[in-house]
Image (tube, rainbow, N blue to C red; front, side, top):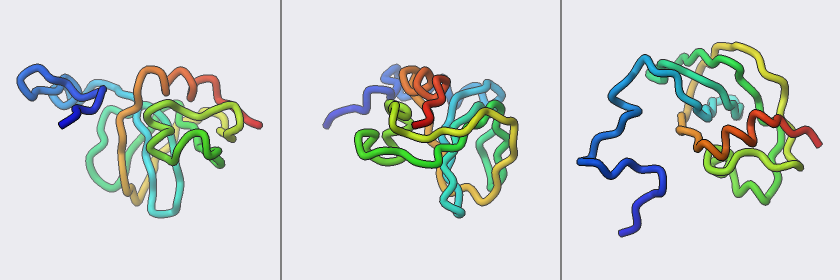
Length: 111
């Protein structure tokens, strides 16, 4: 069995879950087909507040789907809106974003 490269191996404990008030980079999808990157402290429930949220309006095939946006971030051919603080409702998924993907999101590409 191959472990995911971002999974913590130290005795099954993740530092992410042990600090619920710690801000972390996340990718959030909604029932309305929205895909958002931002920083959240609480990701429980149907409503999530995101700081510096960016909406991915289009991602190209090289990103390999919305999960690729969390793993590697948007590429130069993607369309990402400007950062705003917002509240999202009707959440369908929340994914932790890798450090490399954060850098790509912060570059905010718009073709």
